[in-house]
Length: 456
Image (cartoon, rainbow, N blue to C red):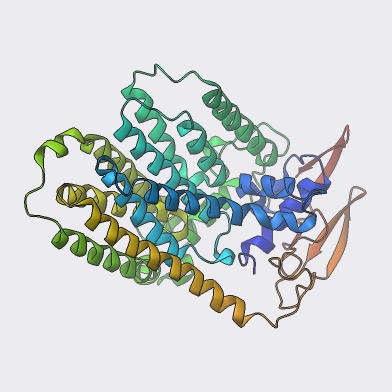
């Protein structure tokens, strides 16, 4: 399956739009979620080509997550016997355990998992740089920029390259990859502006209000979407005071009681098994080590200050996530990286005297357990759905949400001689442009030199 319901509401419909149209100015006026688009949708659109066919649009999600998991595996195995990289290995091990536990189902990826997985990749590479000291990866800024274009709530990761280049007094900042990263960021902000008139939609303060496609007074105005999005992120449906307005609900922590008694409990339910397993793993390494770590080796690998900075960056990320969008899927990489860094930092000092053979044995057993978890979960799913039949099997379903992958029934609405398709459910990858929302009667479509402008 594809990620539900977001893939059907705006992921696949947007991919369809960019496959069939030039960029549409003010597209967020048709469906406000089009303002939240990830760069993953553009990559998915590019995979609809003569080589992969239309089903190629489902590939980038799996490839990206799969490549990062494979990278973490290979780095753990490569540095098994290198005591100087033990902290790095422990961090990668903690992350790969979380991937096996929670990032093993394609239908749960959406636009969130790729950003978080790339954040794991970013911190892993940063740790490697700290240990190697004289080596600074030229990919750091490019990766963090890519993370931001995947998910804007992960903007805090842009602090990582700033910190790293600050350490070197910005001596190595001018290179081709950094120029490419800045170009990517500029292009992405311009794209956001074209679609919504905002640099960071739906932050009203980032909008250029003089454009003809800026939505100020009509349905789904930028300000309304900003308030509504934050309210829903803070568990608006479970509010206790049913008479409170959304703008009041998000102020002065009025949302905290409802959130703490509902979504916070879901977060605890997700995190508790992982934290328990990490703690048990900590005890195994701890008691397998001698009581006196080698102080010389600890000094040689003294990267604690750098890790404290990364921990501080994660705390900033956790704080911003909690204050603005405390839904687990929006910020879990901040939490997981924080836990994994603490785990690897504390345990690294303890295991510095552990024999390589013992360390490798424990780590190997954990990797075997991880591989078995990945394989067994996929095998169970394959066996369960082996006899299921649907259009384009075995590719993920992108035509419809039902078991047969049936395309939705669409109606046509003519606006200024241009056809808009409307679905009562999710649009999926059907006809473009499509929306599942009621079209505002004040919406106008202007054609200027074959470029469309959706405005009110």
